[in-house]
Image (cartoon, rainbow, N blue to C red; front, side, top):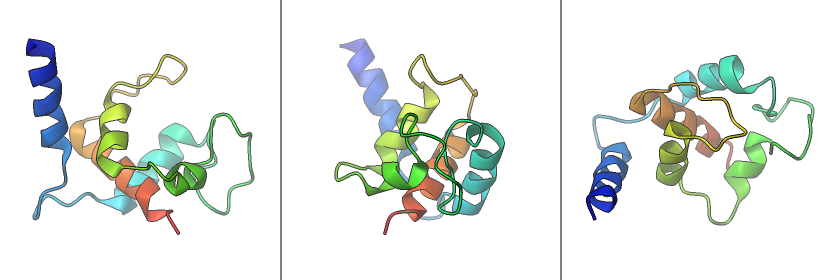
Length: 102
């Protein structure tokens, strides 16, 4: 029960609030620095592979949710390196990926 409460509190803290808007431009810089060696991070980038998915494909998923993605980036799955992103960096990176949605 404590774990669920803690996760809910963290998730609520990631939601973009007015005045605390995520910075997609900074998110793009983070993506180019941390993610481009594995993911196609810009629409212009050549497809590296389907796995890991290009960021534009992530943004197009029907179940895409910017808050859920930011939360995921704070504790990535084992295949991804732990980049040690701060909450604001995770929300910026998620906002950049969301900006690729058509």
